[in-house]
Amino acid sequence: MADLFLEVKNITKTFEGVKALDNVDLSIGKGEVHCLVGENGSGKSTLIKIIGGVHRPDSGAIIINGAETRTLNSIESIRSGVQIIYQDLSLFPNMTVAENIAMNQMLESNSRIVNWKTMYGEAKKALEEIGEEIDLNEKVENLPMARKQIVAISRALTQNAKLIIMDEATSAITKEEVNHLFEVISKLQKKGIAILFVSHKLNEVFEIAEKVTIIKDGKKVGDYSASELDNDKLVFLMTGQNFRAEPYKFNAGAADTVLSVRNLSKAGQFSNISFDLKRGEILGITGLIGSGRTETALALFGLNRPDSGEIKIGGRIVNITGPAGAIANGIAYLPEDRLSQGLFVEQSIGSNIIITILTGLLNRLKILVNSRQEAAKNYWIQKLAIKTPSHLAPANSLSGGNQQRVVLAKWLAIKPAVFILDGPTIGIDIGSKHTIHEIIRGLAKEGMAIIMISDEIPEIMDNCNRVLIMARGRIVKEITDASSVKAEEVFELISRDAGMGAAG
Image (cartoon, rainbow, N blue to C red; front, side, top):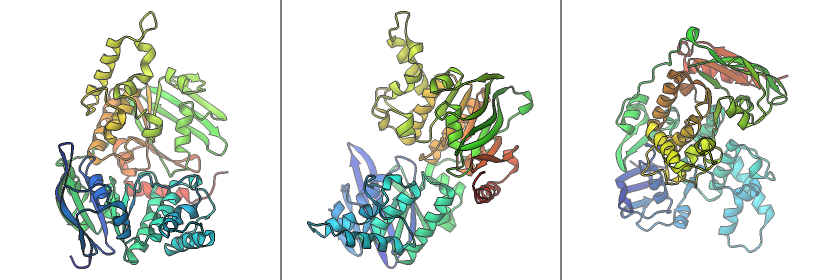
């Protein structure tokens, strides 16, 4: 390829005897939008960190702007024009937008005194380069995720970025915000800045990529023009498997109503929410962030008490004042942020699994019985095929997909009648996503009533028999047969309803 910015040649990296990368090559041209895809554990993160100088390869070479190096460190990588925006963005939440954007440049100048006028000028200039406006005095912690990403991109521009690596940049933002991010990427490309985009969302790969590099088990599968691939081919190259999504079939007439919600309302969040949920049903709820979907779910689980309305479980009115009350009434809730809300990441896998059922493992003397604990831990690890050498391993040692299975196990252990899943596959790879979907469908077929909340429309349409679309805190549309509607139509409905103004 002519006019290359980056070449990675025959990179090999081993950690404690495990080969994370095996003779991997990668080439990125100036101004090119290039996608790197592969399942969790494929070697993507290791490759990114080698390009960024965080890890040193065991062998191979890195060529940046024609200059070859074998001992690249982080500072040299940055000075060569490489900027990595990790999933957590690495911003300082208690500092202002201006400070986050321009502080690194000020530090590079070795000045002992902060020139605030210069700092604000550089921050403003970086934002203007991509046509963005953000209050420079606002603390970053007060910004939504999409705005934080713009701050991270602007920071990269102040350091003369020629290649920006975006790691799972869209995992926590809405479709509308993704579209805006892609517009920013297009502006960067026109300035000759290359983008290496890493994502599990394959529809986004096709939307943004010119070229796609696939790696599997530490080896490169190949380089492809995006036009050479379709979803099925890409999934097969990544996983070696063909996944076929069939619409979820449900016989509503033969099922009992498990949950009834009538006119549930909370000022400023949601209004007049009414629906029924039947045994064995998978009800999808979708809409943009801010539509009220998560707030409604939290109300059902006792974490966001409504102002008015009625909740019935099995035909009986219940007053849910907290999670304990929800659990007692057979309601479980899997949160969208598994790391901060769903897991004790430094605790063992086994401890995370049994945390919801500890009282059931006590003997008559109120002492925990070790044999009961062991049996429960091992049962759920086997039942959900959690890949771990032992339940004693910490939860943070697992891949994203296996962490999600631990959260599932924790709630399935209470044998809920209603299971609310908020973003059940956020940040996990295609193979793990398919497995999670199969688990959810299996639970429904066994009679569990499930609410699936997601802004990934294909996920909703493939796995739910019925769908509620929310906007501005209200249910604006019910799709009674999800198999009869295309994902593109749902995208249009959400975009249209979200743009119709605020709720009264």
